[in-house]
Amino acid sequence: MSDLSDDELERYARHIVLPQLGGVGQRKLKAASIAIVGAGGIGSAVIPALAGAGIGRLTIIDDDVVDRTNLQRQPIFRDDQMGEPKAQLAADFVRALNPQVDIAAIGQRLNADNGETLLSAHDLVIDGSDNFATRLVVGDALTNLKIPLVSAAAVQFQGQVALFRGWEGDKPCYRCFVGDAFDTDDCDTCAEQGVLGALTATVGSFAALMAIRAIAGIGEDVAGSLFLFDGVKLDWRKIRLPKDPNCRSCSA
Ligand SMILES: [Zn+2]
Image 1 (spheres, rainbow, N blue to C red):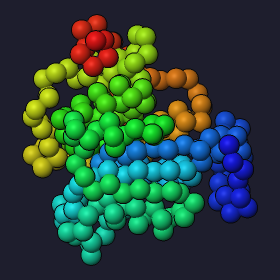
Image 2 (image 1 turned 120 degrees about the horizontal axis):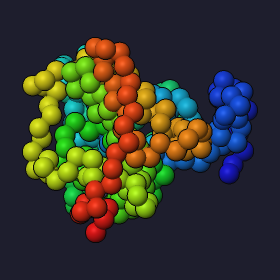
Image 3 (image 1 turned 180 degrees about the vertical axis):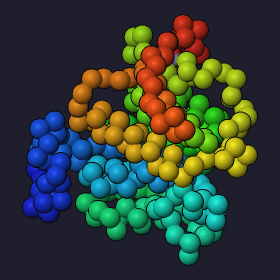
């Protein structure tokens, strides 16, 4: 692993003094490559957190443009950027925040045909996409590629985050969790149900924390546990997810 420059030693000084992270952990973050699917509400929290933290290479995948209704929960975009492509704008945001990060913007919609190609060669993927069809494509591709997945979703006042490594023994994959029912329909739309902006930020920051823990090897391994946040009760719950012995993604 490469050493840290003077700029980096200063930039990450508040990380490096952490006993759980230190210079060794910071170099692991620098050596890491993370793809983020979706530059929406979740992505708007994940992207600044990972860029600021000094993840060496980030790939941002989103085929959408900024809409006025996004600005309530997507603070990496500005009012004067409506209509512009999100992946490119998010990459510009990262470059301005931390020039040390190697950033790639992919303005394509991730699907079953391009999923494995776009996601391969990463150490971890954070999925903050807004529909089950994309999430299942991401989950299945990452089980095949043996790449850890941090899946994060938020709707109304409810959030959920989980780390999946479905190719490992008794560990569930994303499809074990949601089943096959959602393969075709986009059933959870923010447009219909609404979502609180501060909720997507909370859930996205939690997902970024989970990714940093996994890359740097901090704390216990939480793969296969689902974290549920209730923004009305202000309560986090942790549930262990079972592996589906008949799952067509991880148990074939
Ligand atoms: Zn499975």
